[in-house]
Length: 189
Image 1 (cartoon, one colour):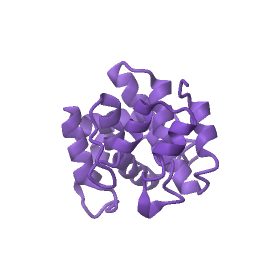
Image 2 (image 1 turned 180 degrees about the horizontal axis):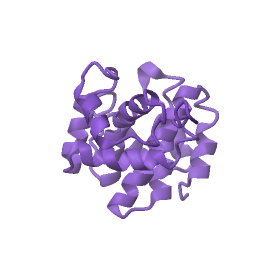
Image 3 (image 1 turned 30 degrees about the horizontal axis):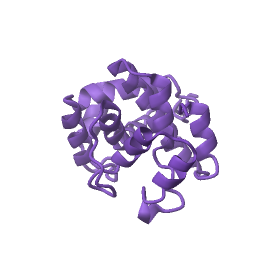
Image 4 (image 1 turned 120 degrees about the vertical axis):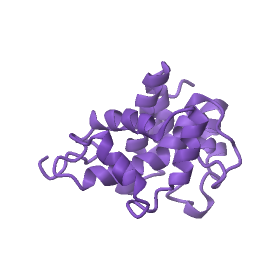
């Protein structure tokens, strides 16, 4: 089965119902779409994988990714896509090391989009006028969005052979295009 965004939505709908988790999945999927374009890969495919990445999180937060492989494979998701999803928890709740550009991107943007979202939420115009410079200032402040693991982001960027600023710029642009859907139009919107 070819994993499309529509198929990913269908698979995740019964699993993820809490709004903040849906928003997180959307943030990650749009960041992944942008990363795919950067790498010259299939944006629709990467977007679908990004949307599905937290498949079991709502029901098994303490056993994240331990209830993902079997149901997704049974639903016809390819072993490569399931492996990519498992790899985003590398050294956190999975021992699957990110190897491909898609896996490395997912590992990196999962936490990175959390800081981007937090930055955008503090601005009157949300993400629509968020500049990289402002993001980087907040990224360096360890107290800001403290739950987002900067070590994971840095490790991911290293795997990608990219700077944090480079990956963040791609993700911010990818998320900006969907500002309304992800609730980041700011108070003006």
